[in-house]
Image 1: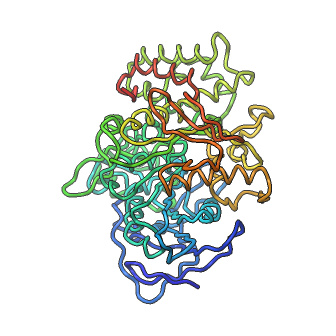
Image 2: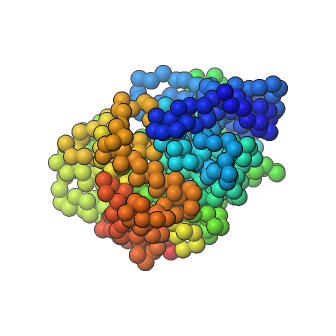
Length: 541
């Protein structure tokens, strides 16, 4: 039994034996804002009221009501009362105070939680850092936008800010240093991290940031026609109206069961596309009185002007990111679209921002670059995976690094570790689609950082796999402690910061190899294409 006093009252957690060595103190299910229910649905999170007596913090709080985006037969679960966080600390009275790592979960902005079945703290806390995980509103509940004061959008991102503010205010009571907080996240969590780097609401709340397989520059992190999407969603639910106030009332009064995993195309190309996209995400928020806006303006302009001063960054991606884009796809129809329509190969930002003649021309050049005169088929599927990975993740992440590295110390990586932990391609249902070769799919980096209890694997601490885990955990926690992932020679490599001239990066594989210019040929071609057709979205200038 262990107790900590925070702003709102006293919490009682528990002390846990860490299977990887030592013990840590666990505090779960800590509320950080009032439940966003009733009239608070879609609104910014409200300050938490104090409680009396001692509050038990031994069980996770409810997750946001959701349906899993990958597991098709899963049933909806969770609650609208979902704003809870978890603190795992190796010591509540350390000298000096400990670095804090604040993790933002992924899930396409439509599912996920901070629970320890996926994000167990044991690997990180053994390195003498504090881990904080949390829930935020997802899907329609978190990201619906009508461009009105009632439903302005970005509710889920404001939940993230509220959790960060709570941590900044209270973490010293758990032994954490409020002036040494590292935010980190993967996929949609990484897109979130990148937005926090340019959000006026987030400024001053953290010192460092790690964005794994995602960026604010990724097309799926930027909402496309959110108001039109909301009107179409209402129509799909049987409410036909152009009256925004009436639509707002409809969504505020709809049962939560109706507001989960809805997908609705608003263009013909979306309707035909076989690769599913995130639809409800971060918006350019309109001003309403004194209401705080999470983000407003143009993402590319904001990044070019500069992220928050002094914040140090790690960013990068996994080797076969594009495999995730084949999850649940009808491959026969996919090949038909790829072989019949040049638009299929036009990058999403070019599709959105260019005339159709230019879209077709850009797609034609892209198809020639990856496939020459060959048809797309199972025989050259790896080329398609490369294209999808660049379109969804890699190109935009490289450009993100180029935009920020001149003003902020930035480290770049490519994750290539392979072991029995690389299971995400099987979770996505594409495990052997590239044959028997080892693959490093989207999210395959996570089991090397977190003790993921949902995986049917127990890693021997004397194994080669555990050495890989130790490498990644050391890199991440060294960065959180020192702002340098390799402050000494204990890992046998020196990871220098990224620059636009040298484009240095660390290949985080079964060996740690320092190199330069990741995926150089592809990146250079994509840069040329964007400079020609969509110069504003050629991010680095």
